[in-house]
Image (cartoon, rainbow, N blue to C red; front, top):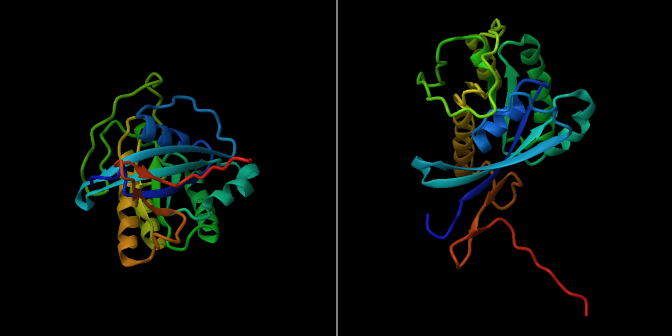
Length: 238
């Protein structure tokens, strides 16, 4: 991996209803902390993260766009779907309406994003409905990340969307699936890593063109060993 800071830059979008925890997932990924009371997203918010895929021997930079979940911003957020290589389609496991709404968000993504986009369905807030450590997509449990800005123990809620129902719908729609907790950090990085692996597999198959797909950029090394995302040229007026 000498000569590069990262091998690929991948564009991700995070979409779903308001208050399902999209911003909290992004902050957990990028800053490893939990936002107890995040402000509503107005339009879009941006965050980036370097992740390593050991079996691929690749370092990938994720450029993540957290989109607003309210109807008034929908026309704005759609423009950010274009060129995305990956999508987190988020719902709240304690809110059936957010799961029902995921169908319309998915339709929007498929109408405006790259047809080869990798979408992972993310059932967030599992910490609110169970005292047990949630189980990951392959049956494993993941350790909780340290908490920052976390509130006192919240009141438990009733789960309104079962794991089995969401998993079946994800399979029917050709989506990846995982349940997460932005509060504990459970499966948050797993969600992005699974989507990243799927995108890299599509790159190998030629479904994403490294030179022409805006959501997948191949990093070019510099002589001093640092990677450039883009070269910037400046000129002066005489």
